[in-house]
Image 1 (tube, rainbow, N blue to C red):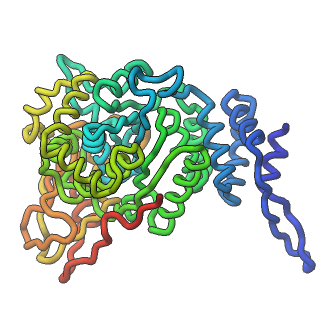
Image 2 (image 1 turned 90 degrees about the vertical axis):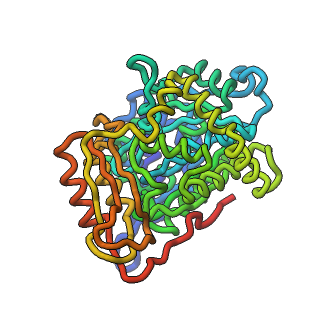
Image 3 (image 1 turned 90 degrees about the horizontal axis):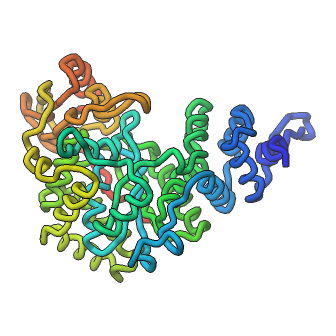
Length: 460
């Protein structure tokens, strides 16, 4: 095979019509062998960046069907190590289980994975969870977990070996880790290239990137939280639904069970944006006192996981199981057990709830009377100023920075009323963050704004 022939096949051919005008004829579907050849050659170094860039651009313009996207996902998946939770790699006593995980496309205040994993684990679901870090305006589950302190100078450990990962699933019902350099190396190389060649916004490429990592962790079934809105990667319901359908159908082509919820990310989730602040909110959720939107989305996503795992027959039954896991205290104890398993100090964590804050603090108060709207994207950008997120992958985050929301979208406020508490990494970051929040994130209207429902649609 030659890479140039495969690129031309996907690119299509330039032809002239009867008036001599040039048009690009439809590209031809690639075979699994052709796709594997490109991916294997790129990971080995035989295929240069400029040819992979040409291939990515061809996919960007001409797309891929579900079978092609499945072949691309499979090729990326097998570019490195794959965790096998069945057969030779089975966890003792769990070989017959259906391992289920959830993936979010990213948002602001999106701490759903943190209460979700212990809740569904308390309902009998085994969850191998591989998570990511904050980048840009979106938060990262790994950074939130690492804000949990351990004994002495240690922290919650997200750098697990395969053996530790499996042991955690067996002991606690779930384990949380980051992607290792040996898992899906093709995705790391290809994403860096997509980022600088304006090919990030391609549904087949996004699908393959997400699915390859999730299947590599050993999941048999997947639930996707595909967000739309100002704080989401997909800005419209239509775009989010296109991605959701691609994820579910490509997973099906790979013989995996899957479903997707299309959810609203026009305003931040919950009452906090930050790292340790969102750990605090997680504890409140597991105590049954979490914000209504976080609890609703957690239960809805958890119900899908429980159904795919075969632990309940109906959605109502699954949600009742989750509520019982919370009200009985089992879910909180499961979370704290996992904290101990992965090197955190659960007693110290609980002692810090409500007291651990950055000393650099500011307030945002209402500038006028009216009904409040709080934009997710601008709030997330303010979080980057504060140290919650990153502009680039090598930036450090501040575990104690963040935003506490005393009022949310739809609330009626009076001039001078406290809306937000803002905590920064240093004194200098507070002024630009507050200015952004006051001038762009917050708006007022004389009438209560209409809000989309939290869950727009479920794709099964």
